[in-house]
Image (tube, rainbow, N blue to C red):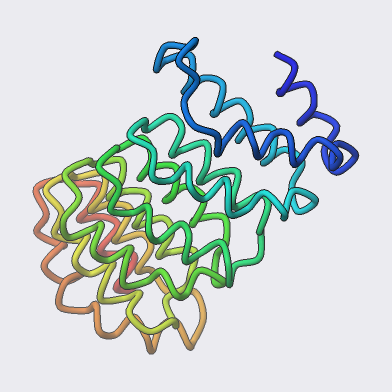
Amino acid sequence: NTMSQIGQFGAQAKSAVNALSKVVTEESNPEFTEEQQTELKTAAVEALGDIGPAAKAAEAGVATALLSDMPKLRKAALLALVKIEPQAKVAVPTLLKSLSDPSTEVRLAALNELTKFGPNAEAAVAGLTTVIQTDAHQGAREAAVTALSRIGLTVKGVVPGLTIAVKDKAAHIRLAAVNALRPWTSDEMTAALKATPALTSALDDSDPEVSNAAVHALI
């Protein structure tokens, strides 16, 4: 559609920012069904995200879409905000807020974005640990493990978070956590010492892949 085409021009489409922002923030048009309205706003939000930092003026408007009742629009708004403000100090707090979204689709989007920030997502450690402890969706818990592993074992809170995941009910998540706890540097070895009891318990894991990984993590 036209808005998607506008977004493809990136920063060159800066002149369309105000018009697109208006589409996002304006009251529902009675001529459109709720579904049509959501599609329209979602397209506008995605176009603003594609424009990127040049759409800074629309940031507040896009943020209002995070309050939508429609998961599709909330997800689009979240991803667009990260493109508009890609710096970790701004993007990470925004993503953190969506870790408690009622929609699995939105939470997964937030988690997948957090994994891209690596060590710069340090502020997300506590939130990611909460996901590991409480999220009913296996994909969300696994993504949280991945994000923690990319933040790094030497960052405070990462090893305790991964240690919790070593006891997850899903074998593939336990395996991911054990592998993430395998240290590669002397600093990581020091940090990983706290995980020794959990890794030792994992030697008796019912899944042979997990127990084998625990052996290598303890060496």
